[in-house]
Length: 127
Image (cartoon, rainbow, N blue to C red):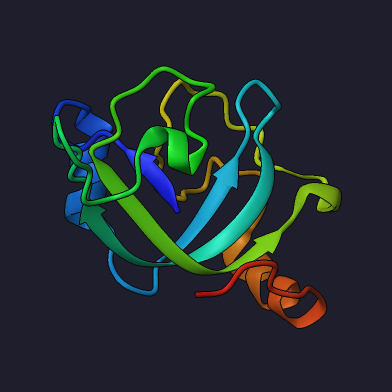
């Protein structure tokens, strides 16, 4: 699971309106020349419900989301997570945006790489 702010963040709002079941999510670390560390298949988003007395969804503490300041109001769920940290895939994209659509600026042909990833790798997390 991953969290986004879909209520005030323009990219979070955009993501929530555009992402569809089955879309591939590519995870990239910041300040790394676009180091692609994982890929997973999107399944759904869920609004977080964190009341003053009781939480109906997991809290930031329960999820381990305590190292970075933020207000994540939406859970992003995915399946079939592949760990790519050792593959040294670098997109070379430098941008402050946390959510992007794949385009020709990416130095890795992700649609071509994905069949090889699923053929030669193992899922590290599946729903």
